[in-house]
Image (cartoon, helix red, strand yellow):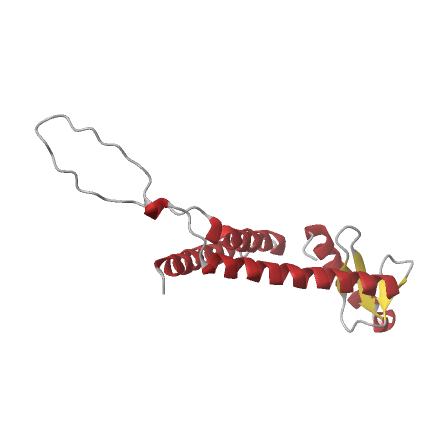
Length: 170
């Protein structure tokens, strides 16, 4: 395994462990606050491979009796390399972005097929569980069976789904 892979593995572990510790310390705070900590941690994890590496080159310089002039020039070690790990990372990010895009397209399809109610949500025959669809115009979608739910259950489900809309974590 290359040194870069081991460095990234260690940095990723420290980053996620730090996020986990912060979330544990904030366990009495709102779910939204803990969600923001995880979002920040995972966002930093995505840019970690592109963070510039700092390289320290230690060289012994013989001491002379006269004044010595030292000129520092970049060497081959400081040259930026395109390695397979970055391409693998980019492919993973592209795969996840494509999956998210397909999810949004399917959500839009579900939203268009659903029928709206006066209460501000839509009923869908294509869903088994509640969901929120749409990035710019979020819509709460409920399964058709929700029309038969008790008022307390419906209010709890709608409150939960509306929190997703407020936090924009669709």
